[in-house]
Length: 227
Ligand code: AMP
Image 1 (spheres, helix red, strand yellow):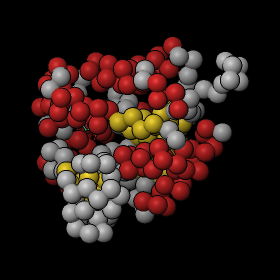
Image 2: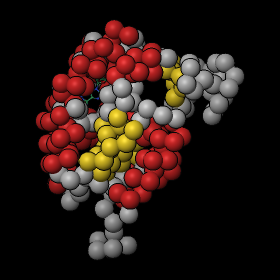
Image 3: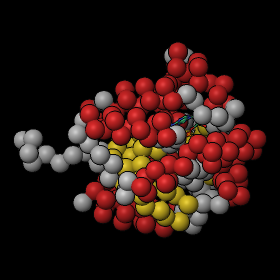
């Protein structure tokens, strides 16, 4: 393929408060469309686990349910976007979370001749978020997400997907931390809905229902936005 026939990699953004299902839906889109899920939360957790300088700076902030500095997050995102697999197209899950990050993303994409295909706002009720978050866990081996009530494993303690038994709960998935994370969302991230609306790329979907029904709505939107 020469440069003229090559299509630009798709860039999709999932917006929504903690617990809205961004991660679950991003993973489903990744499988369905061959895109790469890019979660700054996952990248930061990996940095914390590896004990890097950025990870050490981020750890306490994440445990308090506050936002990590724009500088750290933008650097992590920029490095990840430079990896060759991102040429398949990306679904940004949990980034951007501030206007400064949104502007940095616009600049980064412009440098690469790319632009945002769609920013999709997952609409949910705050009241339901605490229940959703406090019951969730993931398989430590394959990363599949579960929930005590809404999506339990078929056999207790065993991953449906890979048979793994090392189930993990995030240290910031507690009722107290969720309250701080919701405040951070409303104060710092929700303004991005207007930001993307003004740029003509905003789409919204009702994300309160069944996971598969939401995935179907989202899939249709993504198909349209990447056509
Ligand atoms: P998440 O997995 O997206 O819920 O993110 C977990 C935590 O990581 C958040 O509560 C923040 O402390 C931090 N974090 C993740 N993404 C960002 C971001 N784009 N900007 C600032 N902090 C972030």
